[in-house]
Image (cartoon, rainbow, N blue to C red; front, side):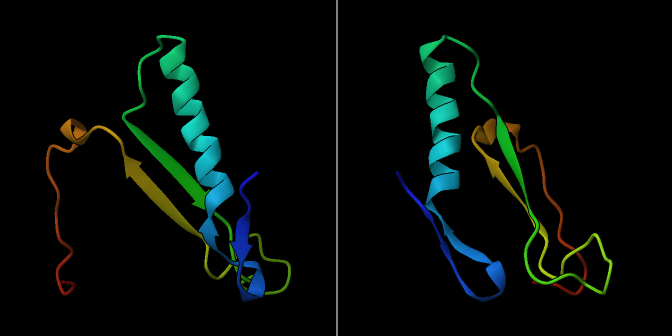
Length: 82
C-alpha cells in the first residue's frame, strides 16, 4: 500500500497514497464504462493553525489536475506575476 511521506508541521510533500486513490477511482470508472472525469480538485489543509481557535491553516491550498486538455479554453495571467 503506498503511503504519503511527511515533512515537518504535518505537511505532506509526496502523496503516493492520495494519487493511488484517485487513479483507482479513474480505473474503476473506466472498467464500469462510465465517462472519465475531466478534472480533479483537491483541497489540502496543511500547516499550523493561523491563530488560536482558527479553522484555517497557514499552508492550506487547492490543486487542480486537468485530465482532459480539451477542457482548457483559455487562461489569464495576474498582473505583476510571471
